[in-house]
Length: 253
Image (cartoon, rainbow, N blue to C red; front, side):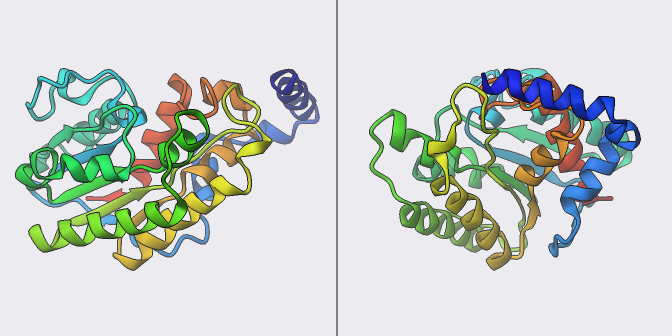
């Protein structure tokens, strides 16, 4: 019913001509309006590492560890982002890796951090984590709390800065799209706390922050939630492309 209502509202909006002037660039501009974090500068020979859960993992070959390789990058927003970066900054000789693992929460990132992050020695480290830290408390019996998420995240970034002085963090906000399968009113306001913590943690560590919830909220002006997301958590092909576009907006050469 929610999906039908989303579609009905979208059609009604389209009929009024409200979306006529909308575009993906304008959506991203609106979503980033008011963000205070600076863009991350990509430098010559930078090693870029994407870390996170299934949204980042998205079909990558866990046995591959070759920079800029299809198997390494997967088939989701990381591949789309990497492809654009490698095209736009061909002269910079970027080396891009994906080490996301489906189902991960922050403590699971920490458990594998030496092998899947520190030994790679990234100059740019993009992390998107948090939706499972909440979602699994209502689906899988996970006993973690918002305070656990906050403390684990801070410890992970502090550990990383000590091991890799000068590393440039990019923090992606966990997001959800209400009314699409897995996500309903019961998520709120609890899930908003995880979004807030990701923003506060980014500010504390001087990271570039990608406001993915704002991006997805703005995108609703162009198409309904079930266009951008498969289940309210995982992006569709269109949603992955939107995420990639937002990520690229957070960096400059």
